[in-house]
Image 1 (cartoon, rainbow, N blue to C red):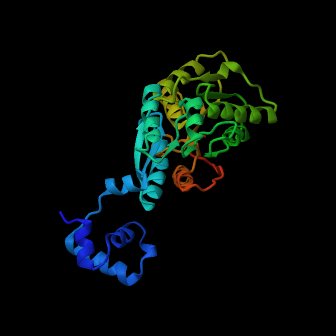
Image 2: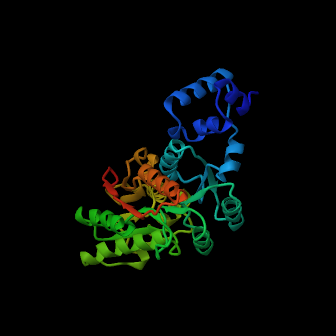
Image 3: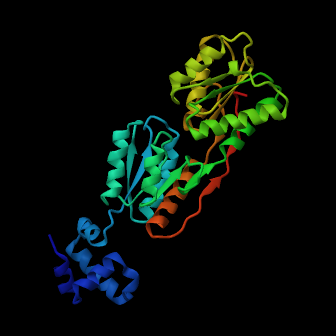
Length: 327
C-alpha cells in the first residue's frame, strides 16, 4: 500500500503539500494540485481517514437521534440530513433510542468522547435535562422537536397553526362534532396540536367534548385502532376525527372500516405528517404535510455551521393542508 511519503517523493513536493492537497486544496496552486492528484491516482493512494481525524480532532460523523425506526415520518428528514452531510464530507449514524435512557447515554457519550461531531435530535422522548446540558458544551440541533425556552437551536413547523388549519377545514365542510386522537400530553407537539384543535373549535363556538378526546400511549397503528374503537362507543358519536399522526389516522381508518362505516360519509378523517402510506389508503388520507426533506437538510446545515463555530438561528418552516378523499 503506497504511503503519503511515496506520493510526495514522486510528485517532487513535501509531505505537508500532499496533505494540503488532500485536506484543503484551495490553498495550493492549481499546477501543484494537479501534479499531486495525478500521482495519487497513479499510485492508487488512499488517505487514512482515521489519521486525518486524529490530526484534526474531528470524527466527520453526525448522529441522528430518533425514537424508533418504525415511524416512516422520519424517512424524508433523514434523507435531507444525509444529503447535506455527504455534501460536506460527513457520515451519519442513525440512532434509535426506543425511549431507553441507557441508549441515550451511549449516543451522548459518543459526542462527549469526540467519536461524533454533533447531534440532530428528532426524539420527543429524549431526556430534556441531559440534552440541554449536552447542548451547552457540544453542537446539538433539534429537528421537528424543540424546547419551549428555545435554548437549543431547532427546525420545526408551527404545530398549533397546523392543527388549527386541519380542524378549520373539517368545520368549513360542515362538521360540528369533531374528535381528537392525540399523543401523550407530556410531549410539546401534542400540547400544541391540541391547542390548535381547541382554538378552531372556540373560534366557531363549537363544543370541546372531553368524550371526543383520546390520548394514546404511542403513535402506533394499534393505538389508532384503540382510540377509534373508544370514540365509536361514546353516546354521541363524532362525525369527524383529527389525528395528530398519519399512523394513528390509518389505524383509526382500519377500525372504522371494520365496523362497517364509511369514510368520509359516516366519519371524516384527517391525519398529520403526510407519510408516503397516507396516499395508499382507501380512501386516501387528508393530512398536514410537514416538509420533511427540508427540515432534515436545514437541520444538518445548521449543525455543520455549529461545528464550525458559527452562530445559527432557529427556523420555523411552512406546513401544508393536503386535502384528499377522507374528508
